[in-house]
Image (cartoon, rainbow, N blue to C red; front, side):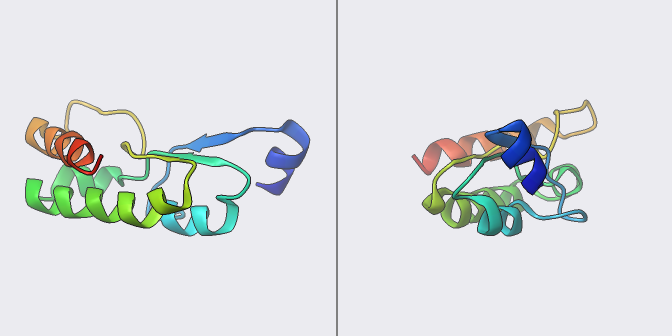
Amino acid sequence: MDDLINDVSIDGKHSFEDAIIPVNEFQEKYSDRIACLGGMDMNFLASSSPEEIRQRTRWLIETCGVRGRYAIGSGNSIPNYIPVDNYLAMVDEALECQ
């Protein structure tokens, strides 16, 4: 990642999955150099309850948002297997945190 930041000069990274590196761990290491976009693990978004999604959304914003250079979102695109209620819970909770 250091090569991409230093040599290519990327200023943001999207697509985080907890199994690879959770967004909060990535942000602890790089938040002073690069923006983090997303972070809601797709498996979690697909399989959790709307209330669990709300709690995780708030936790991500409170954990990553305080460092700056963070925008909440899914860990990737929103495929058709994501329950609509789960997606809306993430968006609604993010708006509540403003």
